[in-house]
Length: 321
Image (tube, rainbow, N blue to C red; front, side, top):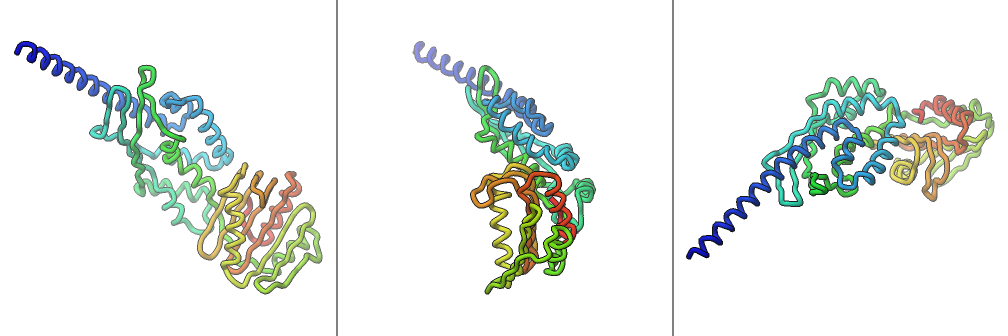
């Protein structure tokens, strides 16, 4: 009887120690989660790296991410505004902990920037977007995450495979980066041919008549310009989507933006594409409006060629890269 009682006392003591240990770990995980969320909203990659299990690998990947999206300096105020007006809440009741692992739920609340963007006028610019964001602080969305922790060298570190959790919070960098400003209207054959002559000096651009389209094109003074007048909107969309897959979704290094709706869309770019169909340097844009599609590009990376592209686009009334 005494032996059984002693064993029971030992088991109870062991359970109490385990419970005390788990309780202590929960507190440490909550504290680490709080500091991590603060670092996320500061967008300081060095600070965030201190909480990651693979800190060196994380820092290298995320610095590359930030370098890409800092290339458009005119977006910095918008990025900063969104971060400054994002809050977080930790669900203390959700915390789980063992001796080596744990988790907790964090909810980020930020301005629904795409909802704000979609309500802008067609001729809105970045300043209009920022003004609209400032007036829409009550238009919000939530990002719910279960953040996992691992005890590493007496510190609770975050396990985030491929940085998926952080990139979910930082999705606004990419989604805003590729937004376009301005709109595409009807693209006339007359305006295109006038631009060929007045900007590129081509008095007689090539033309062809096909069953599904009339095409006008030229390659002159390092600028390729083509106008395809299709008999159906689906043909214009097909051309647009081919470029979209290579420049926006494909292996492209540089700056690129896209806008798309049911009747019109465009892509503007400045950088190097490594896809098979569009390999090399590209500066210019692809534009479609209902039954017509225009491509104006240069593969020559010098200021004169880019200036000619810009002048051509202004002449036909299309947004610049």
